[in-house]
Image (cartoon, rainbow, N blue to C red):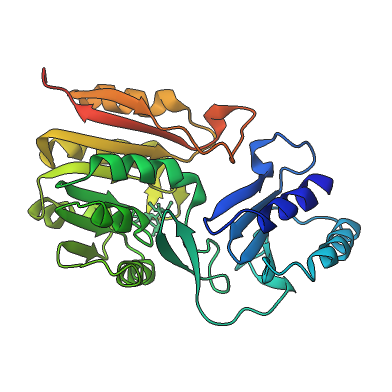
Length: 303
Ligand SMILES: C[S@@+](CC[C@H](N)C(=O)[O-])C[C@H]1O[C@@H](n2cnc3c(N)ncnc32)[C@H](O)[C@@H]1O
């Protein structure tokens, strides 16, 4: 319990930018693998991935009361992700109005009530930064766009065009909101609410692309199976890319390692690995191969 309470103290001093405060899932804290704590100022979100015993939960609730008079933390939410629908309860404060994750001067709408994921992936912070550094003047394809955080960053950093594709139309609507609330001109931004595997024609029409982001789930019933579907995407890339293009490839599955991604791009030919994009230090992993894996590839001139 102590490391969790300590992380909440850090949250109170963390400032405006969203961050992970405690990452039990990286297995660096034996016995606490089922818990993560995130800071979305002024909201602190505790997520439980396994049902804790009643005594542990009662102790957590008791200890949380020490933050009752901590003004920086307006809300403490406990989310039971192991339960159907991932319900949340409030340990401090009442949720009302709109909430946002903040990162480097941009904001992203959150929803703590209805969704398993609040709407913004903290572990992608370094990918967003790499994108920001490379994207000026480029045409970008954001596959598995979700709430379009990559698109907001790309458009704000001067991308010429961004095409977002995700079959979850509600998430894309939040994506539109995310552009509006950052005063981003969306004339060069498209939102395609389609299954990627049934929409290559449409996607190709907006191309060619100088930058592609591939950030799929590891598994989504009927929509994505990493073992057979990632390869299909990498094989489509040559027909979508401009001659000098970059690809940010993300892999979330704990059972697959960096070599899975490297082999897919080696088989596709014409790519060189440029950079391993490290996961933020706030996501420590005993075994880095089990955490998020992200590589930046470029098309090779010799191809
Ligand atoms: C891990 S999230 C992407 C997170 C996003 N890149 C970000 O940084 O916020 C995965 C997304 O893939 C979408 N998805 C899964 N299978 C899909 C498919 N076959 N076609 C389109 N979208 C799909 C889901 O709707 C979900 O929004």
